[in-house]
Length: 391
Ligand code: DCP
Ligand code: MG
Image (cartoon, rainbow, N blue to C red; front, top):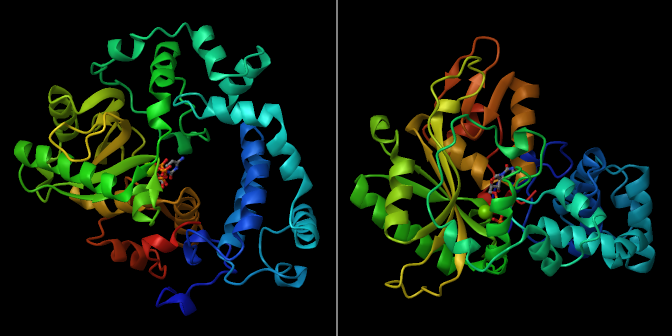
């Protein structure tokens, strides 16, 4: 299926938000090899190099034909000398030696395993590796995990006082948020559950269950399930939902109330982060007061046919109606797609775009698009279906 406005999108564009990026592309095997190198650079803390690979992977994902010769890629942006060499090797041999060597290395495998634990980012993973730890069992011993650790933390933690920039704006890896050792113990206990993928049917059921609770609390809310699910992924690692209410005054405090209710009902077992709307916004460069977020662990209630006892990561994002669609776009991703919307907005329109709103830089004028399409129109971008945002 080709997007109807494919002709207006441009796979050569330097901005991912102008390219049509499918979930699975005609050069998926090449993408898989390059992505191993990208992940390795990321795990080793080589952010610049990781970003180069990420951009190369992203441009290849949008390339609409099978690549058979180097001629096809030489004019693509982000394909430099190094990556051209790797593609050449792949065309000749069907593999990339560097990727295979990395993938076979104990270091890469161990760092990947460690950073799959919620809250352990690359720098912590390297520290643990340098201590000689190699397995999850090693980690459990190191952190002193007791079987009751998970249960002990099954209570709502205190609301964070200070607003935190999202991880991707702090130039950090999501999850590398220094949650502390007690959280790492919990995360180790949850790891097996959180490593299990979530089917689309279960994602939808989670959405229904949460909406039912919310409707009791505050009738008339609307929501969109975002993240990889909205981009068409068959299986998700977590569930992300953006909410609003037509009456902006009803939104304030709702996130916290919903989390408390879900917790009382036994559906939310952990809360990693809970943020309020924040009024203290000295610089007014961020719309910090327009979003409320809760990063939680959810368990399906026994009344649901999807009740399995497997715990799931669930992110709840509450937006006032003015910024609902920017929140939906930001949280739909992909990370690269929304990073390039931000870059595009800045380069071409002098505007600041993120999940929490759109502001023109020179006069701080804020824009309040009424639909998702209006966001694209406002930024002078062609519409891209969510399933083509897998940049
Ligand atoms: N996001 C972002 N930058 C990040 C993390 C997230 O822009 N560093 C946005 C884009 C993501 C969305 O939030 O698509 C949801 O993030 P997830 O980590 O949940 O990723 P996905 O939903 O895309 O995939 P999955 O949950 O299946 O792993
Ligand atoms: Mg997700």
